[in-house]
Image (cartoon, rainbow over all chains, first blue to last red; front, side, top):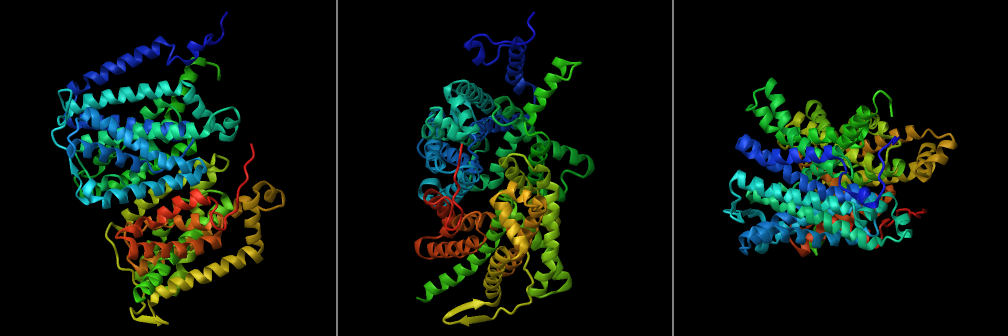
Length: 348
Length: 290
């Protein structure tokens, strides 16, 4: 009698999922996200777009921080690079969006190598501080390189279209962002099950040991930076398409903290966790707004005046509480629940 | 020449606040091995508390500092107990992330209590200019430089001569061995947070009285990173000196190279230092074994 779930070939081991149940749930989710624009209003749809963009950006950060163990607290810098690259190429140089968006990713990926090179010598906290410094330098360069970036004036993005899809309508943008998100998710899942992904995990667990095992640290660390920042740059580009007017104030320090909160909430190194984290964290300010609306008038000055602070406090509490009580994040919670029911009535 | 002297003097004054904040970072890093990203918010909270005390009691600078320090130490102890102590034994990364979470919480709470508008900080000092040699200083700026000098000397003596200071150095060098020698490591961590909060309070009061007390004062914490990195994360005296140097570099860059460079010159210094000499000027070089 078979007493467990065995994987007997290498193909089975690296398959994305071998469970029909999982595949049918994924299919159900696919159908749901495709018909979503016909079910909900514009406000909910724009929230959904924010969630999808957050997924793309957080997957990028999770590849770097969760999978490779290189801590970055300067994600707002890469997002800003992506957003500005996309917006500038699309408006000043007249590139079509299908070309400017990947270009935004490539620009962010290329610039990330500048941070990646010190990372070869630095670890942990020192690297974190370098990325922080980098994000401030990026903001400064964007603000003062006015001839190229429009400096403090910001950029308007109007009438963006891609493959006949009108991106200035919520519905058109939603389908475009959905397509990008699916591509990014599949790409990162595939990277993670290849040699590259396993090399990154080895570097996270112990980089010197990984090097002894024959992993070229220079190559794989730089690759982690480039791939991660490529995705983050694309997320930045998508942000510029959604908000249609970008200036440097959008890319503050809180954005980097939001990105960290997403991967902490979701669970390090897990793509499914990242998606859950992005959904919950993007909806969190909404949930706060609605629940506060039960007690005070939502239009009241006290709420609108401190909306930014309330959001910050919520992110902070999420970070502190999850690290303290559930360091595996939501994906760990989900695994526990699943295990509980699979093994019931035994503990394990 | 006059322009140069002006840049140097204001750079040193600015650098003194960086040095004070940086000492706070270094104290916590030395004793506990974590970088406290909430140091700037600690500064913010204590500066606002000092502001409330100063306006209600109309105290001048020195008595205000003396009253605020114990309050700040209590706050430091409470924060360590509530947020950091339960994380003992977790990976370093998680603890540092908790300080980032703590930072945004403190920032939000402080702004919600005292409101988003900047305040003029009452110092009770005259705005007369004092000349030291050819260089003009405001009185409060001299207080800033003086505080840094006194604290640096005190920190040096503390870590060199007192039982507690030596115990802290022992914990920094090797926590396990320190524990075996009968040092209560958790108490040392608590004391480090108390000291860091006290230093943050001094830095906050001085910074607020030199400039303004506003909701962006927390940024002073991040602005002080270059000072600690330059001095070496685990060197308290290095942080003080690093602060002065970074203040100078920032001001000279602003004065001679270009507008706005003051904001980021320090961060460029971080990147350069970390590439050339990651352990800073005075930090201990780590040797890693597999």
